[in-house]
Image (cartoon, rainbow, N blue to C red):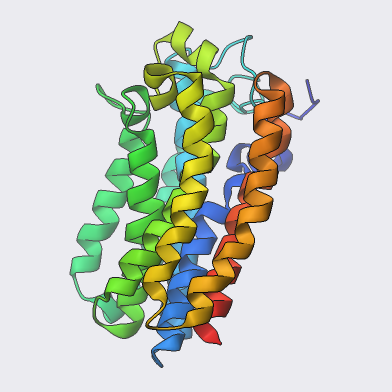
Length: 295
């Protein structure tokens, strides 16, 4: 195990899980490109959305780190990257404080969005924070009942893209929902990869992810299908831009390549090497959608 000084900056950086942060940044990128293609890009609300999204992602990672430790899901059999609390890098009490501080700062940035999106943005923020905590906390945590994939699709897809677009343009648009689905499906694959790797230990600890419930074969094909469907949805953008429909198809090659590696490795810690690739693929997809919209 990696040597990390307790409660150090490095410990907190590892707990933030920077390899997953594309899930917070890419939706803002795509929504801003869509707003720009409509002639309504606004830098300040875009930055506020980015800061809120990234901090919400970090808070989600902190919450997962703490509550999976409390529920004893993280133990000596863990195959994924080491968790900070379970590894003793951060005290549980300090992690709770860090979680509270991160949520508070995220909400402070979110308050700035009221000026652009009205008081409804408070409700969006409150629901987002409650949901990220309910992912692994509470009496009925979403991640433990096969709803983690839906959570990621909704909040790192639809909510992130649709409302980032809304605060810049002042209205909703069908293309925001389409691009939200495209981004969200690939963001789900970050979770799918983790759950695919941890399917046996999750089952033993009572964490009923969709892959635990539906099996290894489902997880394997689910990962591939998410990327394929994301690209097919791009054709709904054809009336706006032929490039927004066609460029995302280039993403299929890195997606397929990563999936082939997943199939070949199939189990164990070696799957951790695909976490960065899956996050990278999300960034590639987001850039292709954005470029297509802006051409």
